[in-house]
Length: 394
Ligand code: GN1
Ligand code: MG
Image (tube, rainbow, N blue to C red; front, top):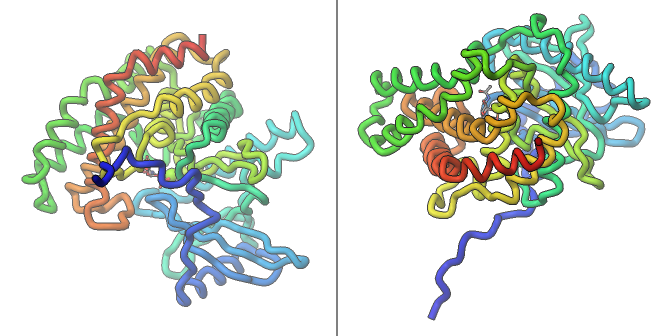
């Protein structure tokens, strides 16, 4: 008799982002990449470029230059100006935040080279360039001998990613908040995300609502619990800090040999936010047993070992600075971020896929369905999840 398929094994131990599985650039694309590189005065001889598939918003390329007999990597990004309406504001945040962190790191070690991003300047001294077609581009040096992962089963790496985001907040704990541009207003305003969702359902722009009764109902049933952290902030119970706001594990670079965390990347959405949101947004990816758009929903749940590994890293770094209210709502933050992200995916699907990049037709729907299953599992496990936070945070 044939064996019944067992629970799906993890597909790969580590899924790499920048350094594996990328596609080469098309010729026309490559020509443009070279022109952008010239604007940023990259020294050496152009070697090659690859399209990096990670990320749903910007378009990212890994570019290699030959210098002194060695290949040097750069990351070039075309910023999505439909999403980031004020890209100059984005770059002004990023340059001052990276400078701020660099100074902090240099207080304790000789060089910050591998621990914070270094953006390149143009001849005019700007951290960006507009190309003739209106494209907005930026460039940073890829940190040598580093790797990053879309997902991993390595608990040590997961714990390291928790430390990376915990440290990031610590570095920015005294950053002058008023200097930050609010690049996407109401970004993690879960209440408004639900309003936009209801508006999308009512407008039914792409004619897709009729097939989505179960998903719509499912998300509406989670509204009360998911909007709690945001409401606690508006009531003054939870403080605003400078947060990263996009804490997927793919936004951390690790040393390729030791796998220790090096630097947090993707600083586009650094804005005032809740610590529970940075915690929760990481958990929805790092502690899930499946992909962000997992279709095997029957086996999708929170992997508690992974959850514990991330929590140990994150909470051990932030422990001293967390208020009682913050600590006691971290696990709730995981529900809030999983639901909010799912609501955004479903809203985008209903609107006809205008915001998140998709790689196949109903990917936003698959993402929304997976997040619904994951969020429901988190609701069941809320006490267990919070107990783990308390174990490391009290
Ligand atoms: C987007 O592009 P990326 O992957 O960095 C989105 C995040 C979502 C995430 C879902 C500016 O981030 O808010 O959580 O996709 N970024 C923006 O994976 O909307
Ligand atoms: Mg991002």
